[in-house]
Image (cartoon, rainbow, N blue to C red; front, top):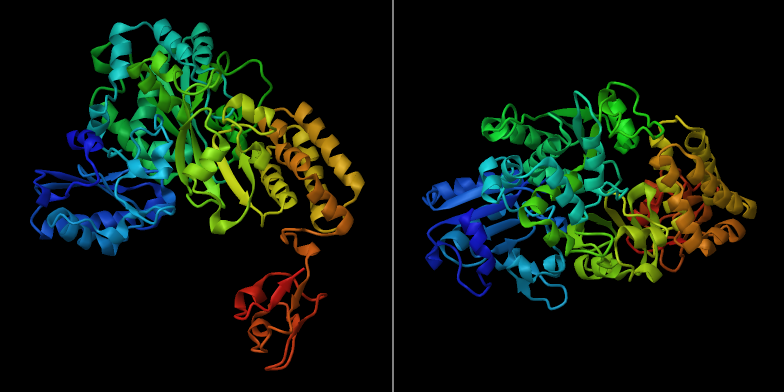
Length: 616
């Protein structure tokens, strides 16, 4: 751990490896879900084998960490203390890294990041645009420590906050510090965390519960998963602190079963915390006891809503209930319950360690601290990022994200997941915080951020998100169960060329009605993609209805496939591969497509080597 602390002072110009006289090296390899899917575990195995074969096992440690964030360039291997950052590493590269870098002291240039602007290789992540504007607080340990070794977390001031709280602070004092920090719920609603804890403490009961909401269901979102995979002890410590503050002895982590790696690392962290006296009876020798259980969800998006989540844990249908009473008064088993999401909890220990004023100095007046986003879609640098509140969309998309893929024109960005809205070029200088995003017609949500380019049809985008929310609706309330289904039917008619101008007016009226009358947050926010795309891309909707045209050529019913006779060589590749037998023509003569038989699957485009297929 000491080596990793020193690495921040190492410059990229220094020599590296054991040849530079360094007595001990550490090799960090990303072990998040994304990199493991790209065989990062095999990279670790090969590194260890090569190190053993070369007789330097006593001088080099190989550690599996959580996500580094730069998913576009994974798997990532980082060497400490020279801070060399290798990208897109394969298992076959392990031997070369050991022989060249670790032993001979020569960096493997072909594995270094290449700056797209200068064309120069960059060996230190500090000098990469992707990291330059980030400030990692919730992600402070991800990619830095071994998440399956509690001692590494402790070495990074882990469990210091709970120890100080137990022996030097009252529950009321800790709650006041959380209030003073300005921390707000990172699950989407943005409710002040300290106020929420205060409510739960205020209710008297023989039993109370602390719940971690790890039911991350937004399409394209992986913020909470990465925190649990890379720094599970921060969640355990934060839940324990919350338990101390509200008077609870029992914690529950509600996590979707589709996160096996996160579940496994949480189990390891919980077992180690118990072994070290940091969970269970009389924590650290105090009179306070607290323990944690893991409960599994089945992937229902609606169970991200706290009352639906609680019902699911109780073995009931995952349906929301009208509030009040709030969970702080009557939650799990009808007892006072505090529910926070993963990212919110990840901020708690460091706030108590570094101070409320420190955290409050970051961000904007009403939105303090940082926010983690899963940056995805048509963006060059797909990954997990953490930026101070108030950072603009332009900075995230162009500075950190590296701009839109393939030189395409930026069209929109969806923030807040299925419940959010699509923001356009005119919103690029919008500071990212709760108030500004809401005013722009979107929302913070849990942190999904999907970038779209000129090839995306915004009517189809709205339809995609509505299909998701319709499928995930619990069906309890009529506005969400029936209203969203009617919205989807209208959008389907429009994308199939059967829409009318009356349909467009109905979309707006029905959307506003659903927002005002649905029972829970899922229903109340489900029309946001529809309303935001109507407001920002009205001309596209009108084109679909009046001209039966999709400018992005994404709505199959509104496009026509044809063959350019000047380019077609008559090779027959399109004809042989057409699943609908819609293509006719003789060998070495231009072919034609029967529009009445064509199912617009795009197979002909993928098979044509002469760019002869046109779409109108």
